[in-house]
Length: 172
Image (cartoon, rainbow, N blue to C red; front, side, top):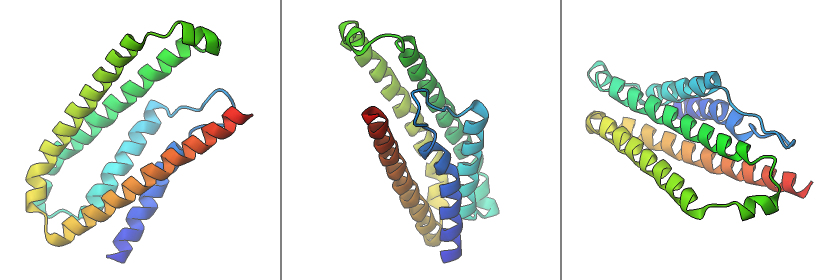
């Protein structure tokens, strides 16, 4: 169990590190390429599948889960690219111009669309997991719980790191 947890933690650190440090200290931030996103998604999928150690009977449910994970990752990347495009179109504007030209209704509509997409993607992922989860042994469920906790902790730490970096950049 501890070897598996160590392997999961190592894999998680490897996959989460580029996201946590994807922001440079300069005004222009580094972006992950489509290839980088695909690699991260592949690593995450391999990490979860490896942690679960599926039996041949359980493996038949995996393709639906993998497809839902990939679809969710693709949609997330598209949402992020749309944000970058929106922010980039205003890059030359001063803060005062941005405030004068803001459109809160348009912002709320874009946010609602993004949340609706995220909701639909999560529902598809939950639906894909349901049949497999019903067949997992208690040990597999514990490993899945451990992976989930590690992922959530890493995500929290990555977000905090980005916030700290952004605060440092804003102070400069």
